[in-house]
Length: 492
Image (cartoon, rainbow, N blue to C red; front, side, top):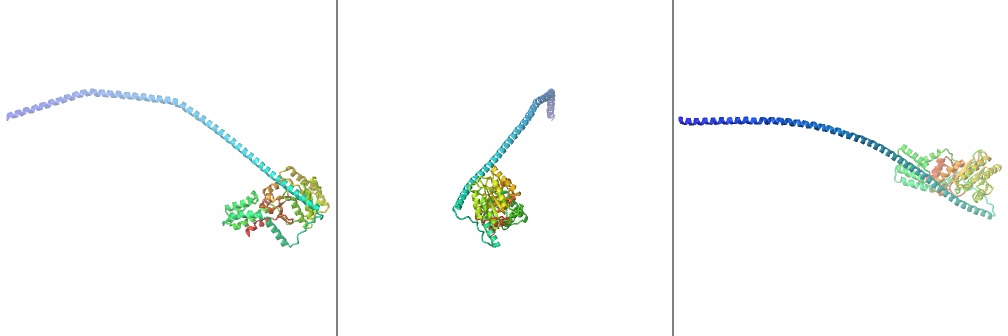
């Protein structure tokens, strides 16, 4: 047992000895490692410090370079900015200059365009006036030739007839009611063409309508203009009807006719003219001198004959003065009318001074106790200044012989010429102070509405209406009767 103990005891000691050696080795190794690691760590710290220092140096250099670059960049950018600003300012100035030039060019173009438009308008107006003048000249020439042929034929008839022309007998006596009815019938027949065109348009406008709307008013406006009422007068009438429609709120198409008639009558009543009621002589004006003017072909001579006839029917003494010494056969035509009517006649023949004829006709009327003195004048275009001035001379000649005369300057207008009649009225009014109008050939045109336009625009009374060729178909103009007749068919 002791042997085994010794044996095992020796084994344990050996193990302990070996363990201690191992520990020594480990400790020695650790020390060596630590000795080896220490310089490495020192070196590492030193390297770190060097690296940190180099990094800081690099950062400082970088910062310096960045700042240097910024300075250089700033030195480069500032001039560029200045150049850009200068360029921008230059561009702005150039753009402003370009804009100004463009504006000037546009204004120049606009001025040129305006001048060209105005020039075109003037040329168009001149062309229109020239065309109207040419048309009037042609019409005048045709009428002169026609009148000449009529005069020659009538003169030949008189020369060949052994019987002295006798006055036209007065119409058989009728009571006042029948006579008024006949006058109204003649007026209705004379306005037949005007009514047909006027109301056919209105009928189409109101067909199927229960109220007056914009479409109805537009069609009504077109109908009035087509009847030659005239633009200005048409606008007045439409504005009055629109005001009535707005005031009364509800107006049906049946009421429209009565409203339109009333407004036209009121409009005509506002022109400060009084309707003549009969063929009478104003008190204190004897002889009553009437100077008749107008263009050729409107029916001056015929109107003179018809007016003389009406005064003769009332037992007045009438003389006709032939101051149309220019147109061929004009003197003979007027003499034929004086024979038909049975009145006195005064003439100095052809190619004599018309102012002298007018003067002496008034003298004849005063010396022979005439009640009415009607003086014919040569037909002339309203565009001919020289001939228009001659009318002024005739007017002064009459006034010289009888102060205050002529008592009426009667302008004869052809209703078939429509708006041209208004133009004639404008020019003749300037030359002769027109005081009354006679509207002829009303039965031969659909433009009878011109009577409304003339009465409204010129504030000159329309005295006579020619409603037919017969000698008795010359009527006194009455506003209400005229408008009533114009609207009569639509009510029936």
